[in-house]
Image 1 (tube, rainbow, N blue to C red):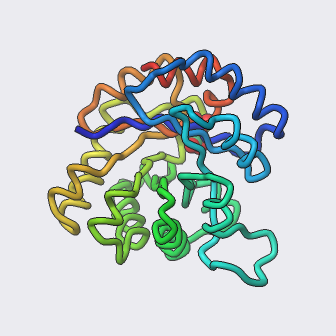
Image 2: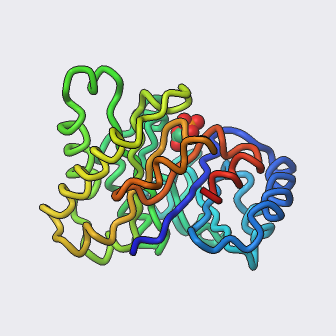
Amino acid sequence: MRRPVIAGNWKMYKTVKETLHFIEQFKGLVGNSNHCDIVIAPPFTSLSAAVNATRCTQIGISAQDVFWESEGAYTGAISVSMLVEVGCRYTIIGHSERRQYFGESDEMVNKKTRAALSANLTPIVCVGETLAQRENGQTQKVIQAQCRQGFSGLTAKDFSHTIVAYEPVWAIGTGRTATPDLAQEVHQFIRCLIQEEHGGIVAEELRILYGGSVKPDNIKGLMAEADIDGALVGGASLKPDSFAAIVKF
Ligand code: PGA
């Protein structure tokens, strides 16, 4: 059985003060829920405060990005050891906004994923097609290329510490969620790809999250699908009550 993961990606929202306020309320709402892994990814500036505020809870803290070099003259970049030092356990990698606005390629996603794994950080690696790619019938081709290059060189052990997030770009922040059927189709496709390249056990154990306009009223349908193991939530993770409702799907 794959343990579900519900992760909130706050993007460029929330100061330290707002982060602490959220966590205080959210902890009360989720109580001792223990049926899934709960992850929150605040901005870098809030990571340390978020880790401290969630000590002795079931909530894990994630970064939204990381750089692959261990140190050096890379203005603005953050290394895996810096994240580990503040108590981060996960990092999102290759979000479509990073790909779109910051020019991230699959090769960069691969370097970041390997760097995260080398430091025992769990990478949450995002893949997904744009609307144009879907309409041109290229969804599978795009996902296949993103997975092949993004996961190049990963071992079976690496995969056991890796989470994949399928996020169709046309569903992110648009209110246009993929239907459970449509999401399931791609999740199954991803699992088959991983099976072909890395074997049945790796594929069977890999957790694949869906992301793109996940809300309290559509999470249940998505979670009912065989290959959907959780959600990566943007907008609806910013309010304690809506994120808690998603956690309690
Ligand atoms: P959304 O964002 O839930 O606001 O669509 C999801 C994401 O970007 O991870």
